[in-house]
Length: 401
Image (cartoon, rainbow, N blue to C red; front, side, top):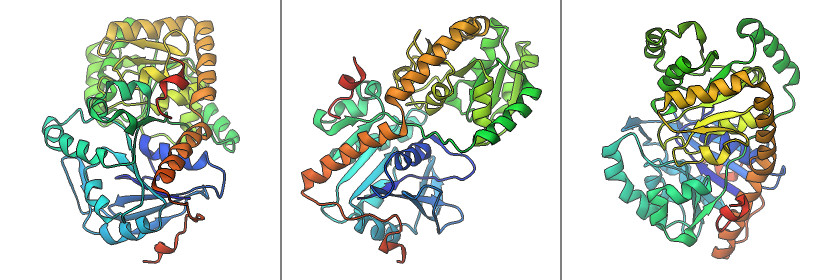
């Protein structure tokens, strides 16, 4: 079987959540079972990349422009048509308005599915213009996939779709076991610099991530906060830390490597993800905290964050934009290592039960088989280097999965 994924970006330096989900999906399937082709845009395209995973290849064409945070390309039509002609399924990752143009290149009879990663929250004009168009597009697909039962229930767009069209497949995390020595070395270096037992804010400090709330929460705890990742508003966050008198308990790290990320997770007392908008639809970093046996603190925003984190079982869930409540949760885990360890064990067990790469791959494989069966197609033998290159139990919550 060959699955053609489309998303607006693929980065070797900084994997976003959608990219990590696609790579985990490929890694979770047996080698030779399903070939995943990742079609994307890049400023330096065109290029083709074969990552370490034999189930995955990446094909990029040149990005022409970006408008309203939407990437477009005038060079995508023919390459995408060639790849789609050789695919058994086209898998869109939304929201990305450009896929509406790409979809016109898909031959009749090829099943199309879409993972609906998030509602549009930050651009009211784009939401008003694009959302009706996207809804009509979704209704023409063979399946629309939500990343958590919570999002399926709370997204206005998904709620307006026919119930039988929407399926649920929670994301998974790929865990590599070949980095042990490197992680230990990074752990020693970071421990000498940062110590242990800090609160860890991991990822880019985008507006919806709640960085300012995390800084303010330090007024209500004695813990230290390490903010690791692309800090797009570092000056403003540093100014806020000085204003609140907590600058001596905030450490900013620039982009960290995968090895450094796992070392930081091993050193921290708890992960903190105080996201404030529905743009944070799932929170893969929360799953990674569970992998590392660390509890996570997040906010109840009606998305997958409170599906990944179960309050009092795997971490703490607090109201959004509530620095006092966030600080109290941080202080509780900071001052009670035994509780933090118990919640971390709960998080690891929840990861093993619900968020492994193999589990995610199994859920998606069932959806792929279902839509192919509905179309009466037989999947072709796969190769990621296709010929076209040359030219309230959780199971009950997973409705229709």
